[in-house]
Image (cartoon, rainbow, N blue to C red; front, side, top):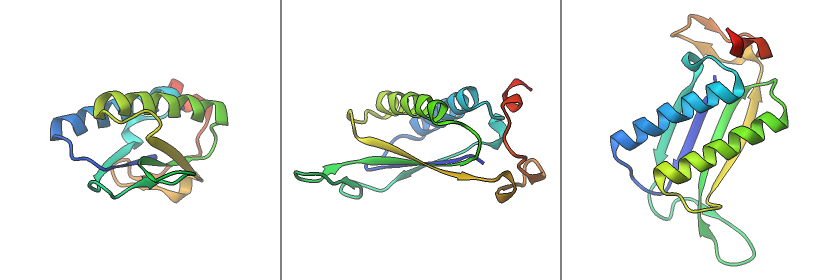
Length: 131
């Protein structure tokens, strides 16, 4: 954990997705004070007409990022992360202003097993980012 899932309506080159994944991992690690080895990013290209944001008028093309994270960060830290991720996705993928929403699901550490690390995640603490 975390697992950051971005769903978009366009297709992007491999190199663009790899660059975005790297930048997302670095940004998440810095802002959320987390070990980068825990971060997984997926970029799902669902195709034109696959994601819509509803409102008073006609639905508009949308994008969404779902963030499964460990509990512990306050809303101000998550807001900082959202703003950074939105700016980054708009820049790298050319998303339109107001196209991307971000949602969080927060978990206890023992709900995510990392084969690479050989165990469940510990509960998040502010000291983790200083290691």
